[in-house]
Image 1: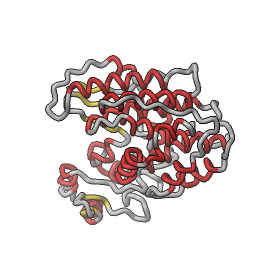
Image 2 (image 1 turned 90 degrees about the vertical axis):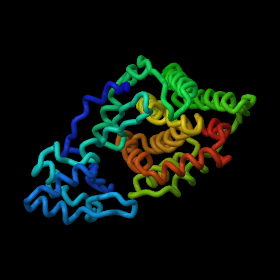
Image 3 (image 1 turned 180 degrees about the horizontal axis):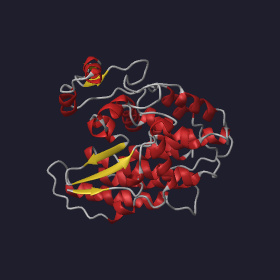
Length: 334
């Protein structure tokens, strides 16, 4: 088993109550069985509280009972009572791992930090050439869970996409167009079809269909809704290229984190459409308000979209079935 990490991975350290957001609010905390077994052995007031506030949810998971959208052990100083009382080693796996994310492909695992964590997002945007180790890695593919030739194809295609997204001689919008065309041609080859030809419309297409779809997703707060409203107010203003460097790093993060998931159905376009949708919303919001805190906007978007199973299901279904999200339409809104 080979494990691969981006260069920013080991630089992460939780900044606790100095964080501008918190993983101790909004989400349910799933308690793994080994940790719960230890908690059941803790004979103290804290142990009693943990046992009292651990329940089974509708999915059969053991979770801490949320109180007003907060973990009940996140205290008024915005610190964790379990960490203070029992030590870091006795945090449940959910809390111990986040924002670390692992993509396990049987023969190899790739590790990331989630953009939903503000400190992780800061590290991701600060790092150049973060994924060199991914490109240098040599994988021995022999898993019974997927076709090795298909995985080799995806690894090669991911490298090609990374080159396109890193080409700073052209704008980020043009790089995304090039990625859409490249993956459209690849998708046609996978299906044994002729490559699609695209019309270059003289008038850019209105991205309203993007905004209308994203408005319908399930959100904990109105942060993304406000971003969409701000993006809509940009109207026909030309997109700024001032923050292309940040968008490049966000796009590469999404590429490396999600592209290989295509192994399940060999749908190589959906991961790229995911990047385009995020770029359209965030770049237009930034065009409407150049003072927008882009890091904060990217982090809030990730928290609401990436970490919602339901939203991810909706995205994949929409990208695969809705003709509004055709490659041609997306090309003409960039």
